[in-house]
Length: 190
Image (cartoon, rainbow, N blue to C red; front, side, top):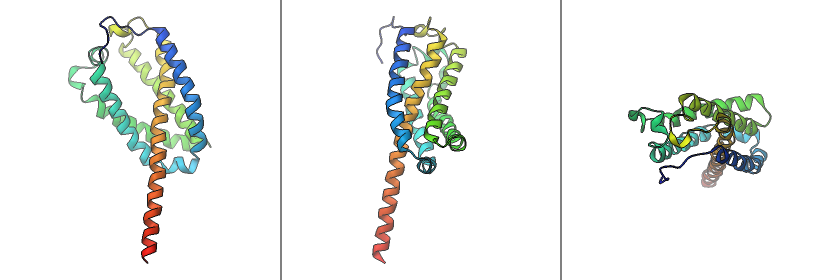
């Protein structure tokens, strides 16, 4: 990604991004929470894990491809650049499985619980990034405060998990439709 060499992320940008993600979350998440009933959420288990792995692997390939020199190269050793995406994808897939299980255990609205857990995970990962030096080492982020970095992550990750849950929902519904058609086809031949 071609950014001017003196480009800097500011607190104001982060707060504006937080507001944007929060508004998107309110609209999109509320619709999906209403649509994804507990039985459907339960049935989406492996779709959710698979889509999560693919989604986060691609996100991290994009991130290290576009921001290695300006951000991630300051935090991770050079040898890890192409190792990070699949490992992150696998870690997030395991986290998705954990969140799926927890969401079913703690709430009658597992979709909502899943999103809240995903947002908390985002804040936790960004807290770790702050500890690693993301607001000190990369020139692009020097000077930003910790609070907006951690708070934007909550709403940003909810949006990402919304995409994952939406794709999982659609694939699960499609799979059930195809299974029904195949079953009907077999029964018709009898």
